[in-house]
Length: 304
Image (cartoon, rainbow, N blue to C red; front, side, top):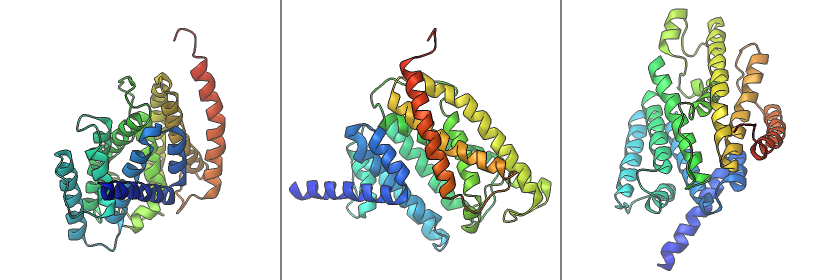
């Protein structure tokens, strides 16, 4: 028993290390906002998905190996939900096993986070090297938004009552649209094409032709869509009674709204990378927003 507990704690340390290395912003946001008794579980969830996604995104891995890998992960997750933990797992795979075995089961925000995120990674494993349709892109954005939103509501204010709304996933959907725009150059280099085949055909250019003039038109459309979804989705955040979740949601939005500002300033021409200046602008905006969110939370509008 002592050996099992030691291994469990060691893997918690691994999860924190992977998270901090992959995204310091995510790591410190979790330290500030995630429920104290769920911080290690949050790191397990993020680290496992980060590790899995990196394996699938590696262009040097053969397609058959990618598909075999993600099929193994799906089988592993299902076995853990049945409390039948396989013996032949890596430390990274044990992260999701630890999460599920000690978790609340299938009917939870945690399960939604895991299932939707694995579905996205599975889709990436299959689509590498091929073009996608508008319908697939819409599904991709919707699945990610559900994973992120349900995950946040599980790890922050767990057990609290969160309102249901037609707009509850829209802010996260907007953020993912911006995220895909940010990663366009890197994604194309790795064989992931996010411009739908319908748009490519109607404008007569290829998925790798990032210098084509028609690309800016698609980027403009996506930025406009993201702006609209942010406008419709952020009022839902104001309804949340859990202050920490409200802050996390607004910080997530702000990070990508700053990116949209930069894309618009560049006349919808996408950069190969967005560096330190964008991060600093986002941090300043997040700091100002924290004050505004606090005031609105403590002093709600009349009639609310």
